[in-house]
Length: 151
Image (tube, rainbow, N blue to C red; front, top):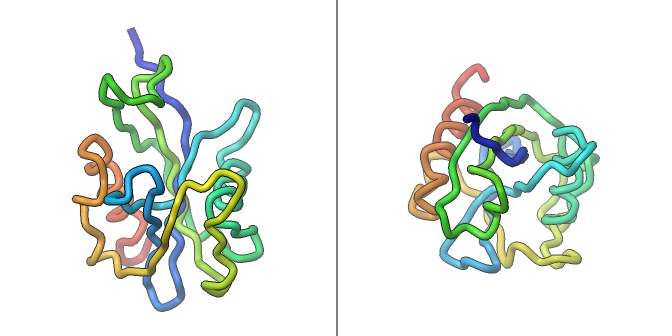
């Protein structure tokens, strides 16, 4: 029996200086992550990326450009995860986006506040401990894949 994975997108926003955006979760303040979210019925991954970035950070497509993307990153939910709802886990498409805006363009006080803070860090400074155990391997693999030289 094949498992059902919830389709999802995630954005690695990168400044021209190389720093990447991470955001502090409102519901789990010890967790920092990339903007991300589910792909709605009838929506493409690109449409979901634009919607999620605007919903979570206030950023519009004019604030970034897509450099590359890679799909197929899967992780499984623990049994007690509220997102489970008939899904074994999530299958993510990661987008590497060049940030074209200013920090003042980022607005975390959106209609459904998911993040309370943001900061720019180097990829080397990303701490896997900021993530739930079940996501760590996938996020680190995506970072490695999308930020490797020549990617």
